[in-house]
Image 1 (cartoon, one colour):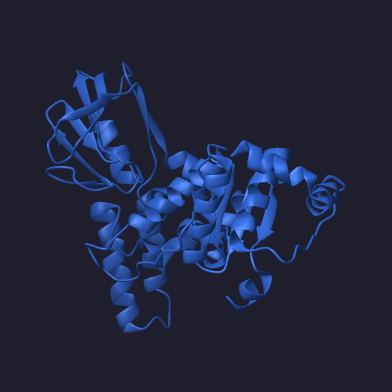
Image 2: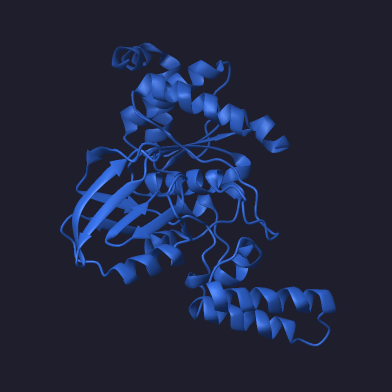
Length: 312
């Protein structure tokens, strides 16, 4: 595939494009390319410039096709940022899969693990947690590390993980004696940590169906399981509960709204987390943040089919 990228250097149009980028031109329009040729150009640009690349598509289907074509030409995986549905109702079994994919993509791109981010325009504009909040809520569990079990449990709960008897889905964890199973958000397999006292004595990925260990690992990066985390509010979950109670006590607050606010405040005090926490994202993260705030200053932004993007 490297040879395919080199072939573009023979095209005067491609050379004109790279020269314009090197000269600092802000907006460059390119016409007449099929979708696969767009991915070809994008892969070559990223390889030649070495700069982070963001590709904005009309919708998720188009974004997935572009990401697949880009990976084919470049030989590198692109981080795909999907859209998701906010959870505003108390739905205990609400799926978090897209949320986990979003967190994984934002984390990978912000750490340059994947220097390319592909996203539909809606996904880029959706409100999310700030980068510093994502970093604060992420933990690394390492072999031979000392971690009190109670502290680990509290950290996982604060990061949005749900306790289960057995781990079979992303965002769950279980504790049995000195064994902690956790399925990191967006990971391909769950991880089992066996403790000797407070020390991580063994660490490895396992098959949730057979419970057999797949491979040993030295450390695992555990991302938060939700974009909305009450513990990151000012004063933590208790501080957010206090803010909700103050809203409930405001003159003019309707009876139904007051009831909902008071119930949610009590849920925060009892559990620190509940399904519909997305309701209070602006209170938890006062600064309006989207995926656009994760983009480094030197990144290139490619708008795939700008007329379609305007419509979207």
